Amino acid sequence: MTVPVTVNKASTQTALEAAPNPSQPKQAVVFTATLSAVAPGGGVPTGQVQFSDGRKKLGTATLTDGVASLSVVFNGMGPHSIVARYAGDANFLVSTSSTIIQTVSKK
Image 1 (cartoon, helix red, strand yellow):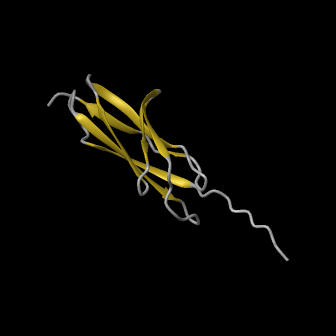
Image 2: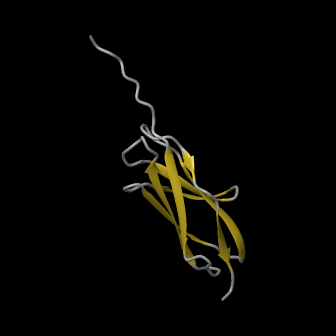
Image 3: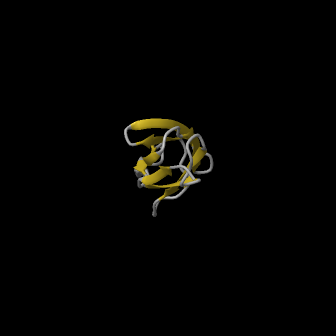
């Protein structure tokens, strides 16, 4: 007898880091999103991560071994509210990082 089994997508967690922070105008800042499966899920998420500054899309990066990075240059000074949004894939659900504040100022 064959019994059907349903396997649900695993939940994910998105961690976001910025380097350097604070930064200076016209200095490259690398935003790195690290994705992990939430237990009892397992494996490594694949797909795309979108990085945003408030409502402004900064760009999209592809996950490699659960990590996606995007380099951004800010021309003006001030704070920027950055989030990373994972789009999910065939095995993993979407998730969004906590907001980090990228501070751009003079030395």
